[in-house]
Image (tube, rainbow, N blue to C red; front, top):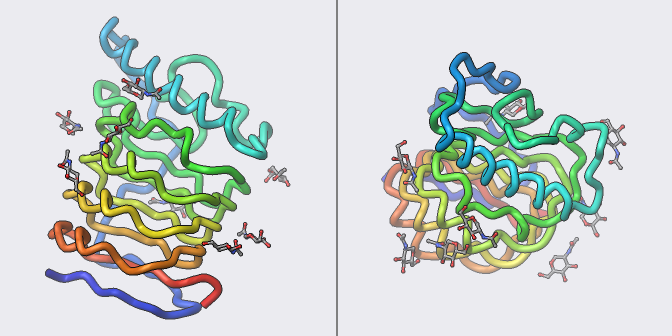
Length: 194
Ligand SMILES: *[C@@H]1O[C@H](CO)[C@@H](O)[C@H](O)[C@H]1NC(C)=O
Ligand SMILES: *[C@@H]1O[C@H](CO)[C@@H](O)[C@H](O)[C@H]1NC(C)=O
Ligand SMILES: *[C@@H]1O[C@H](CO)[C@@H](O)[C@H](O)[C@H]1NC(C)=O
Ligand SMILES: *[C@@H]1O[C@H](CO)[C@@H](O)[C@H](O)[C@H]1NC(C)=O
Ligand SMILES: *[C@@H]1O[C@H](CO)[C@@H](O)[C@H](O)[C@H]1NC(C)=O
Ligand SMILES: *[C@@H]1O[C@H](CO)[C@@H](O)[C@H](O)[C@H]1NC(C)=O
Ligand SMILES: *[C@@H]1O[C@H](CO)[C@@H](O)[C@H](O)[C@H]1NC(C)=O
Ligand SMILES: *[C@@H]1O[C@H](CO)[C@@H](O)[C@H](O)[C@H]1NC(C)=O
């Protein structure tokens, strides 16, 4: 298995093994959504809006595009690679957001591939329900204030290629379940404040 565990400080993280599509603004759908797709969008929209409402600073100027029930259509930080799959990427890196992940219902995003919430002020623990994101390949929570231990449910993310948890307040040992992540190529974490 090809992951490395680095207990180090001030690491400039570079991702070279992976070739993720650049986050553009939301893709513009070219086909009309069917009723069934609409229902899926509604669930995703509801989950995102519930989470937004739970944030300490919703930073309305930045998440003001998060209104209505079609997250694939011009919601900042949201990308739907294919309209039928719904939300596939969530990138709110450097959004000055503060809050927890507890109110983000991960079960509502079956096709989510990447989460980048790095460089914000998220705190609290990483919820075990994150294990429901079985299609996730990229999880970047670096540069926040997350604490507690890493949930063993991280081992449920069997498609994970990249896991960045550096520069948080995470403690404890790395759960052995991490060995289940046979695709993992990049794993960084460090103990705050290094
Ligand atoms: C919200 O975002 C704007 C633009 O980046 C920033 O100037 C402002 O400080 C942020 N507000 C809060 C409360 O974080
Ligand atoms: C998220 O967006 C930032 C800023 O646009 C970008 O630098 C970063 O590469 C994106 N993350 C991913 C996983 O593409
Ligand atoms: C989370 O989302 C799933 C799927 O959409 C739904 O079944 C469940 O009731 C939601 N949970 C909460 C607490 O809203
Ligand atoms: C993962 O992606 C596949 C293919 O898009 C899809 O069929 C499946 O429902 C997705 N979700 C989960 C939880 O596996
Ligand atoms: C993390 O929390 C500490 C203590 O509450 C605070 O001083 C610091 O600014 C926070 N850092 C971030 C990145 O939010
Ligand atoms: C998925 O989330 C639900 C709560 O929404 C939880 O009961 C369940 O254990 C989670 N599954 C995994 C694999 O984490
Ligand atoms: C998630 O992982 C737990 C143990 O960490 C395991 O008991 C459970 O069956 C897994 N769930 C799925 C859906 O893989
Ligand atoms: C780090 O987490 C511990 C609890 O695990 C807490 O007591 C401490 O205040 C946290 N430090 C910061 C800077 O948030």
